[in-house]
Image (cartoon, rainbow, N blue to C red; front, side, top):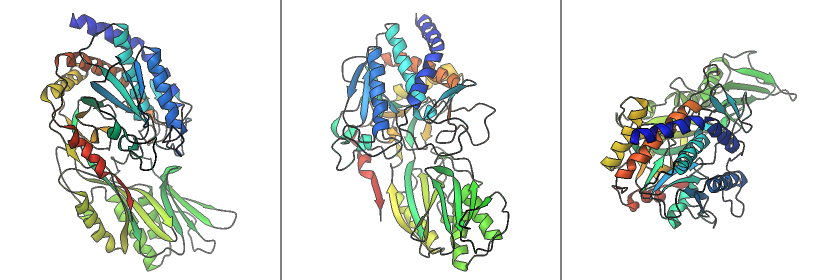
Length: 492
């Protein structure tokens, strides 16, 4: 009986491929980068449009839609409190420049959908939605009430969960609503995860100004570009390795270096655009001693992705090593600054990281000018029946056995109680894509329809198997919810 049902589900999943692609395109074409708050739209008009569209889609197939009026909505199988939540985010990071395709005019190409947010996180919504739709069509009765929750601020602070002081439309889901008994966060991979790294962003600024040129990098409009601007009288070579040089009408000289934009959890050990530009300027340009010190700090730090030079090297086989991503350089009142995005396991605390960075930066006459604390690292004791069910569902479809993993990026699972990272990462660009294109948060972001197909099959098996499992967690609500107190803005 079970095998017959699985066959019917798989047949419907295969038949839904075109609909999954169409729904992903529909959602991607809503630009949902965070904007200024509006009444009823605490994170801007675009993210709100996604929530409205989600509720409309849910109602179309008989799902019960709820707007929690905090920037989060849900669509559930039954008109009752959900027992299981599948947490998706409808907001996206800024698109940047360098796209071959249009970021908000998504297209299907060689088995993929291309557009901003296809794999982070809108393709996952289309996949989860169609699983529930198939269950509805086949009249599959469950002993629990699953729901898809969609938030609108995962990419820029998770204020949809935690709240935004002073904004009555952003009270925060965890402050005013009851989470489901267990949650799945598909913004990851398979089989399942029950731990996550912490996140800390440090703004490190030079005490000495740069007077003869400016240097910026990693801006929202160009996340993979570093730019230095020199005055017309600068003594400058005609060419620089791995850099472009152009003269503006006013005679100023603009030097740029590019590297593929990457997710903050996966910095390149070879460095990035900041490494390229600072190294070229150091080798080929005349600079004062203080300017050379600034560029030397930029060069070394942007390549030191494991924090070795700062005494931050932390090795954790289970959770993964600490990583440092030099994601952005700013130029504020002649003072150059570098943003460090640090992801760390439970072996070290954020004050210890701050202290070590402060000491290392001081040797180059830099100081910490701002601290942004994201979620703490966590490692929960999972319900063994639930974890086993998720891993078996993954193994049944993928035909390979993997160990539970650690989430490296901050996600909803860092804050929700009894939350399991559970797959659906569909990122697999076409083979003919240029290097650096197709990744999550990158240019020409791509989601593989084959991977979404696989994810739907795994989810369907897991949802069926959970019918025989008591959906209760191993941690009380207050353990994970205490993460709310760990999020704070830049401290100066």
